[in-house]
Length: 207
Ligand SMILES: [Fe+2]
Image (cartoon, rainbow, N blue to C red; front, side, top):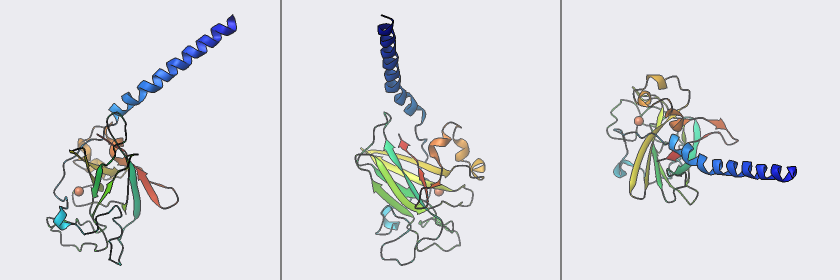
């Protein structure tokens, strides 16, 4: 008799645990929506891009020279608000080169553009929602902390954000980073670790 009660109790405990597991992700996802950002002044429109606009910004097709800077991998998943992977999402990134110059006619700084850096790239997600880029560690631009711009187009919706290097000392002086609430920041912070092929970071985009 005692044994049966114990078993029922264990079952109940198991059920409660399962219910908690079912309901937990929805709550967790509501808390980690990717904070949006504006497009900014240097989005390379199609006429400014190289013919090669793939997900490897370190190598432009037909150009021998590779990008200067520290090569890194940026990957993650595009997820909807229920945590479901978004297939066929177009993920675009753009950032300034190692010299701090954008692939944009509006960037009038008197510094040479790194001719080996693609400046812009895109990736289309599969069923798992995964995206991946090879690019360079972002560097600072006058008035800005290092960042990578990210734009996602999925199902007719456009979503734009910016990713920052976690722990970078210039973040706290950046006007856009400072607009983010403390609990929003981890969702757009890149934590880099060497997993064998160089530094990489995983940032999910949830919107
Ligand atoms: Fe920027």
